[in-house]
Length: 264
Image 1 (cartoon, helix red, strand yellow):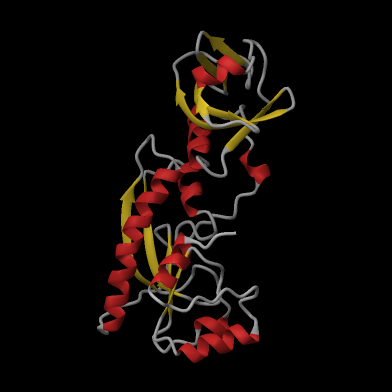
Image 2 (spheres, rainbow, N blue to C red):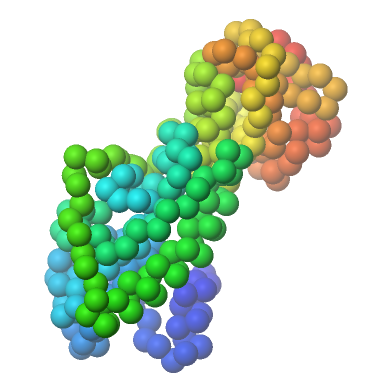
């Protein structure tokens, strides 16, 4: 076990670090009250119970990795890319009991490039989000914040993604599979199965080649393509279970795949 970068930085600056097993632990609630916070800022954390987020006189704010009310939930970056969005962003808002529904303070939009994956978009939003959190805190401190209610009619879900959700369906159109792979890359990673082995796929490219049976493999030299509903999808980076992530050419040198076999 090692401390997170946040904890390391806090300790370097002689700041208290509380790590309760339960956020409803009466002793933890008591410790937070004793700190007498003016404001609580939540970033990439669990859902705070009401007895915590109502303590500060200025409220509690959260940074969310979407343009709320779109993509409420635990995996907004992943679902935005899976759904083929070309724009996302970050939102700061006041916490309320119902998750991701509080009044919005600031939004900042960010484009999603056609070849970006969840990892690169996450890193961009982390940088933008840090700036937006600081700007939000300053507005609250100066009494200039102007929270606005969310339009619930525009809300869309971004539920938590489980392992079974990451299995590739090769019978889908190429664009859908392409977005699915990059929306789950590098984590938790889309996967398929060959000869009983799990193979994670991190990067693909859409080709103009006609499709055979969905999931059917086409190996040509150091390249690998898989048939989907409407054409073939080139596989560029992948990983056999227990091995490292690698480019297709390197993968094919150590793993036997034959044209006509199928990914399941």
